[in-house]
Image (cartoon, rainbow, N blue to C red):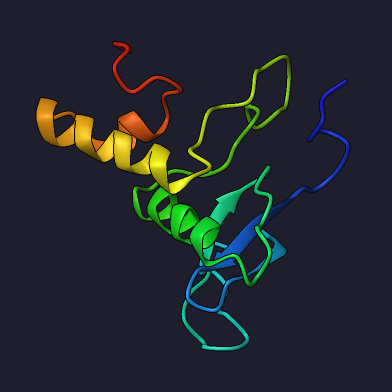
Length: 120
């Protein structure tokens, strides 16, 4: 049975500046942060927000979202797919930035790989 086929699903939206996240229905116009009124960034179906006081974890989330990636563990229907890798620590982000600078590969591609030195 599909994970997301049971009804209208909501996506996680996050404001990295305020370090908060919400589940909202998908809207083409987007959603605004209730604290700073800036647009919320779509973080995907399977985003697990770090604690608000954990600035290091939020800095990793900021890099991932700025690269245009979302936290999606499944295809939109949720059928038989393995979770996609996203860095969880600043050391993992640093390693991928270093490899991107050396090889010229796009950072977004490297952030989605468990091993940044492995070819896609």
